[in-house]
Length: 183
Image 1: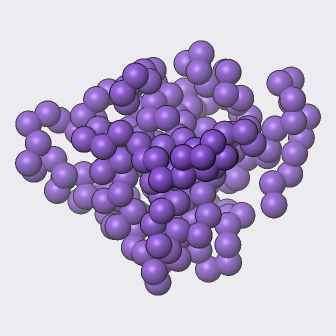
Image 2: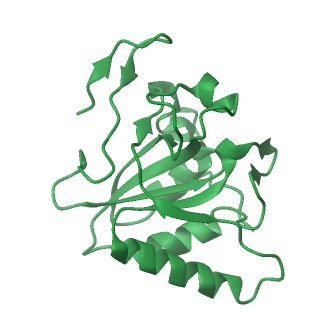
């Protein structure tokens, strides 16, 4: 359960530490940034074995940022999706495949009409196994492409859940099957 605290822009959830979890028991965590988090979250929620998702901000230097702050581009954070999954039902490698298919990893700081560092492509790994898998997956994805993949592969840092109205946004607005831009 997320704890709320007072913040200048209203009540904000406390961040989830990068290696301690608040997810379902027995689940593993993966964190991805691939442009606007609404469509990316919807794509991951459709995968059998994904137990929970949250959209939020990670990879920056400002604690407890809000959407408006992140949009101004001065926090260093990316719009990201935290995915809790059952490794007996879906592998991290399968999540990586979904990540690559959910966006264009060859465009720097841009996905579709959204542009800015907050829309960058990034994989935030939670352990050495995820790091190795992400690098191997990126290298395999790069093989058939002419353009270079610009996806960052970096250690997970504090994840700050976005405001409630962003959570499951497409489902709340009648578009649960909508997925992010696919290359």
